[in-house]
Amino acid sequence: MDLQVLWYVLAGILILVGIAGTVLPALPGLPLVFAGMLLAAWAGNFQQVGWFPLVLLGLLTALSVVIDFFATAMGAKRVGASKLAVAGAMVGTFAGLFFGPIGLFTGPFLGALAGELIHGREVRKATKVGFGTWLGIVLGVVLKLGLAFAMLGLFALAWFL
Image (tube, rainbow, N blue to C red):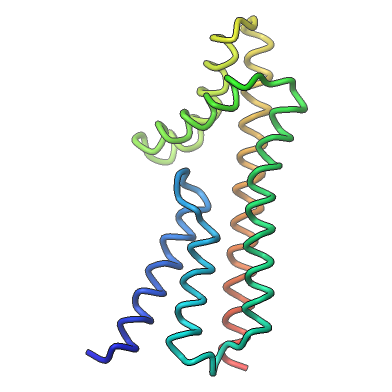
């Protein structure tokens, strides 16, 4: 097998894992997508995709990191979440991996709720905080997925034009 083909396959795998990482916790989603695109550009000696599109893709990747941080923090802050609620949401998201799509959807909420209850909040306030934290995480995932597909579109445009 040609070594260049191997690089392209590895780049494709990085991109696919990165797209999965926009939804799954503990995987740096869009940085992996960017790494895959950078590897594909390098494998093609930057003939199809030059530096300008790569700089734009890098900026979109940096924006995704900012979105990820602020969406969760804003959702939590708006409802007065404690640090335990945010930590609980992260643990709940990770634990949700083991329960499929329903776990990924409910895990952050349940984790934030548990964090607030441990913090000593009443159930009503803890539920509000859990929902706000969950909403911030979901908003972040939706925005990151949008960025992932925008990056794919920009990369494809640069590749084929």
